[in-house]
Image 1 (cartoon, rainbow, N blue to C red):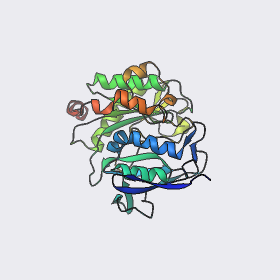
Image 2: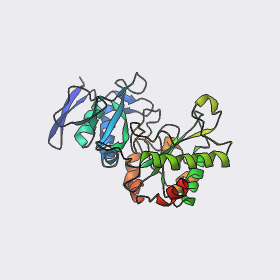
Image 3: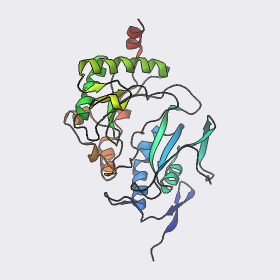
Image 4: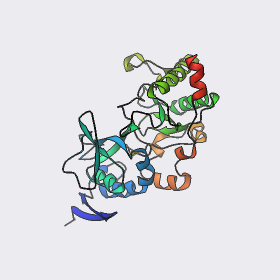
Length: 294
């Protein structure tokens, strides 16, 4: 008879692994045991973007084909090693260490969506522009990302594209400390409006999906205090077990496919490329802000 529950030690803590053979991503053949192994590979890359943040997870107790639910409040019972932080009467998990990550993994938390700001602050930790397709299968998404990257480059702003792990691409900009969400939204609106004016058949800033037609929404509004987005290196509960993966601009220009960046390929990728986001220095946005304020 197969063992359905076991324990293991990580960093001095005893954790439980239940139902190790349960298929979480059936099409990809990924069981819970394989998932936990992949989380260990991802931990050095995923944790920095979730540590000291208010974390929302999406749980799939029976795998991606079953029902799911968003988990904001820390699930009970809490192991003694799990740290939490409260905001607006919600007690969030602070996923700041490998044991906490694996504890959530065993609960079938398949996606990790951190806040844009750190616990106890109201300042943005980074700046992200979300390119959200209106079509379920959008062959122009990498072309769209490339255009936005060029707009940023023309403003002397270095950025890193990353797959959302679903259908979109997010443009990630490391920033120097001291900016506000409102300042970043001001720049985001300028870039989104310019993109929509320059490429009206490709981009829109129309928030209502029913009015977007087939255009890609340049979402500069999602980046705000209290909101979340898929973390770099989070798995996604999608057919191909995709992972939200930072890309090179060369890969974008070569029209890479989102499905190719997944739990089965991510280990080799991070060993080869490291974290591409960490290779871009924090950006100084003072010049563009000065011009926009004028």
